[in-house]
Amino acid sequence: MVDLKSLQDEVAQARRARMEAEAAGFNLEHLIEQMRAGRTLQEIDMEEIEMEELASREDA
Image 1 (cartoon, rainbow, N blue to C red):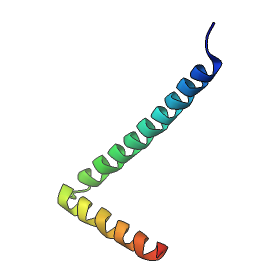
Image 2 (image 1 turned 135 degrees about the vertical axis):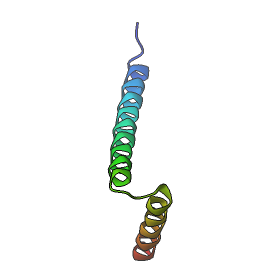
Image 3 (image 1 turned 180 degrees about the horizontal axis):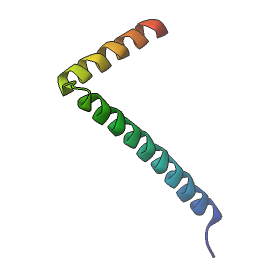
Image 4 (image 1 turned 45 degrees about the vertical axis):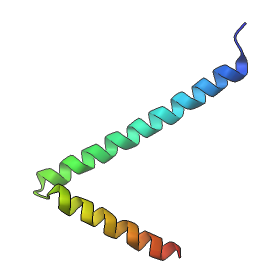
């Protein structure tokens, strides 16, 4: 007989994996759009760092 708890855990893991894959896909699409707009990876990285710093300041 199938262990119901194990099956539930596997379903939950699959859902998390799907959500992570969707987020990664969105991030990749966003990166491609920015590069098509003429931005370099360095510019994109610097902007992300600045946004993270602003967010951490607002949380403090």
